[in-house]
Amino acid sequence: MRFPLILATVGGLWCAVALQAGEAQDVGSLWLRAEPFAAGSPGERLPFWLSANRYGTVDPASANAGLRFGAHRPFTDDSGFEYAVGAEVLGRASQNGTVTLHQLYGRLRYGGVQLTVGRREQMRGRVDTSLSVGSTTWSRNAPPLPKVSVSSDGYVPVPGIGNTLALKSSLAHGWFEGNRFTRGALLHEKSLYFRIRPSDWPVTAHAGIVHHAMWGGTNPLRGPQEVSLRQWANVALGLNILTRPTQTDEESDRIDANHVAMYDFGLDVNLGAWKARAYRQFYIEDSPGLWFRNVWDGLWGISLRWDDSALVNGVLWEHLRTTRQGSRPDLGEYRGADSYYNHFKYKGGWTYQGRTLGVPLLTPASETPGLANSLPGIGNNIVVAHHLGVEGNLGASLSYRMLGTYSRNYGANRVCARPNCKPPLMRSFSDRRDQWSFLAEVRGRVPPVDRLSYSAAVAVDTGEFYDRRIGVRVGLTWRGFYAP
Image 1 (cartoon, rainbow, N blue to C red):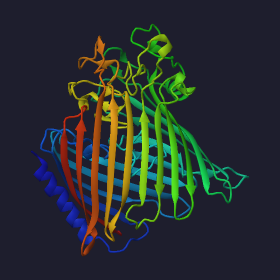
Image 2 (image 1 turned 180 degrees about the vertical axis):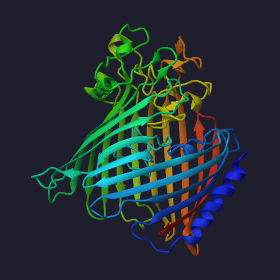
Image 3 (image 1 turned 45 degrees about the vertical axis):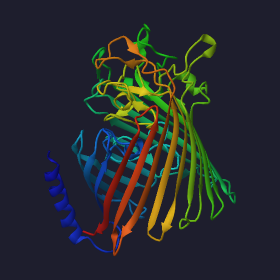
């Protein structure tokens, strides 16, 4: 295994930079971070919360030993032309070991406009990021995908009415990995949000729409898909979307992309010492979803936060439901008709490097018990879940986070029965499988070195979906600054 060499090389780089790192942060300096980590379980696979929502850095299929080293220069407060850069190397020994540039990006900012090029960790949607189960369309579960994006620098007030109404938007083009069912697929992504903040009111309202689309590439059953400016416009505008495509539709080739979108609504309440957030994300995959046919599908969330130094300073409850999926019970259709995150043409599903891009409770076939690891697509997407998160402080230099998730899992329709995904398709499973997943995690400083901290976590799965699993993860993180 190459990991000892990786560890020695990256560890040596860490030490060399650390010797030159300054004690104080300077404007324009590099933010440095290095983290060796390990995760393991008595069984073959890790519990759910040891690998989910970690940007794909932890391999769920086995024990892990890894090292992350990153250097980032963020934007400064300069209001003129400004730049930011970042890079992070990940080396991991596991069943699916890797040495990769986990992040590598450059950013430019001028006025209220930003340009970002490369691989950079991000999520889409206004959820409680530290405790959430994950945003509906783009969570923290998969590794960052290479993109080129143009966006506003946060919310920009509408001229003439002060800060009462503000907008933010983004437009991006990206590339999926080559070793998937439809090779060389492209990503189209855009978003538009409105913010209403009446003066002297403690309440702020947010409303937005986020649209992603997988298009282009070469399908092994249908051949190369059109890639042109005209086709990009069709994808961007959502043209040629049929109500519900199937492989037998004569018009199926007119469907140019796998569209994944959401309406994102939220309220923020700021009462000084107390802050609250309520949000609702509506999932959209086809035309009926635009008109709220699946009104009960999506994510609900309520978050409360207060004094950062308190024993408990944050509480979150979320509810996820993905059962309706465009089905028509009056026509005898079974729930899950649209098979969320799956697509008849892009059979790899809404995934990147084998990890679900959206909520990780909707699992790829490789992580769905009873299905072969080699099958493409999503194996479990009919889910009802309740999720609770709590975090706080156990002392001046020790914090904790606890997550508990209960889910009812009903499988998925139209799952590939073989790796080449030729008909017939199958249903993964039809019985109800309940599951409980828990995480307890602590983080603290290593005295007397302020820049050195540790983390430790234990996770447990129990229920009928996964096998009973227990596992631990430990990590040591060094942070510093380097002023060239």
